[in-house]
Length: 360
Image (cartoon, rainbow, N blue to C red; front, side, top):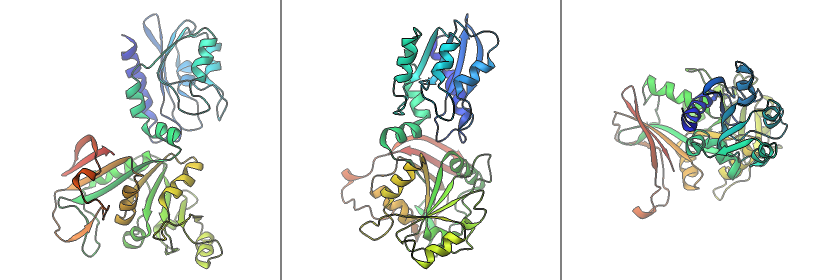
């Protein structure tokens, strides 16, 4: 096997950390000595051992003189865990093969320099594109300072997310609903507008797959969230953040706060609604690296119109409603040349539905 084949194994290991590693990156590591794999590991959960630590602990025999394949540059700073570079040096690993440099300002090629200063041979850039694709959320968060934003919605074949009377449960199939819960588990936060809360009374938790519940974020400029709404239940286990333009002195603010929600005042946009970009900036400062927007149409339209969306996941059911509610409203696009262009990554089927997973 060559470097690329070993790195493919490391990337496959890294993907096992999906749904649990965030806001840390998914990282996998493989240790090879005398042409044999002697250790494997991956970053299983944020706050726990890094991939390199787990691979060394898994190793059969001494790792001195071996080659370490790792999907991301080893860290060289102390956080929740000690620096991985120190461990690599201490165990006298001879060579380190890295897929991608770490964009975290605390690392940013310092880990590579640390290893090279210890006279460890470093090879970088092996399957870099694949590693960056796996950790697109992490790299976007580190390089822009904003969360990675995914918009997901289910629509009929004629582009409706609800009937003319607002009924939307359920447009998509049970198989697609399970897929939607997987998306929830992969994000740090799930966001909906107050219209969705009032119309559908969603729970916004992960129930159909294994994974963590994301932070529930409700965009509610005028504080219309009912204190007994489903998003106000089980707050000790699954927190709810209500983003509003109102001040703490507002009685409605105090009522929802006393009910257990956390409220965040965000400056309004020109329409006097919560400014989504300012909200995302505030969430980023709290280490929220990804947000899944599930509706409704006003929030989706605003996010797309401001150019805040990175990923679009559309579930299309083989149904026709005719008149109904559109997923995306007016984006003020008057020429086809100004249309938002998508790069489709995956087309798949879940039950009778077709799912398009694309990047903007």
